[in-house]
Picture 1 (cartoon, rainbow, N blue to C red):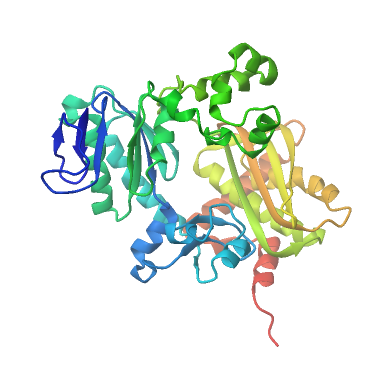
Picture 2: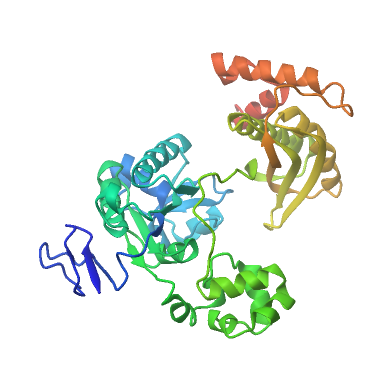
Length: 427
């Protein structure tokens, strides 16, 4: 058995609960502690933690980061979670569960900057860093003991303290032998935690867990599995892989592997972006087609801007709508030529939107995304739409003007109407 104090770095080959040097109870003990090298780090309530860091008055208050009452909770702090609030919960439900909560609008620039600094710290430990979102990522620390002059466990313990000191937020760490188990471990001791889970002990640990404990088993799949008699992970473990594959295809093989702690995926540094999108939640439900079209243009512009920043374009455009009953509807169109132009997205999806509003259905959210991405090209030509080259030049000229002189340098008629809708009417 090996033990490591997370507060003073004391190490021993004895099992400990309290550090004999600093009397800290934050001690990790595991028989294979110095042999595990695949890690998952997850920032604790990231957006809310940044808001509390930058505004000390929020320190002891329940904080919800998100939009208006019509939107959803992007992140909530752990105080709010004690009231049953969670991410992706409709804001009005969150405020009903926790009326004293403080709602803070997201500040993407602040979160991106903190994420950038965290990534730099991770890459000092190993070049094999795979960020899977703005606030979490995997590290492969195999063979880094000499360069870091520390075992992976010790390097990660020091990293957690450094992030807390330099950035002012906390992280939770999971350490194992593969990505699935590392991510599973990182959620066992949140917040400010550090947990280990080896492949050898994984089957016994996972067996009694409910089926949706496995990362990747969502509510729909969990319900199907439960209807088929799979209530715990152990039920999957005792099933023949062949039977699972016959029932669920490739998902059956995936279930067998994860239930037994098997994950052969490498930590990749070349992970490609799969889609670019933007969406807006309305303050009131909207059924009027002219207003919805203005909102459609707004999300097309935002998606186009993000795609251009990433220098990609997509061959498939997807419209997303959500009703007041929170029922989602998506409609996709595959283009003859990939695009990152707002005008093309709008032109393709405008008739789709018109069809979906013929019944008078009101919507609370609209979104646009592009997928099947590829690197953006320098020229834009489309035999089906000869005017696209001219529109592309006009849109890029507008982008250049906004970049140089600000967002208000070039404003469309739809943007003007949206701005007028936001302004309160004078009495």
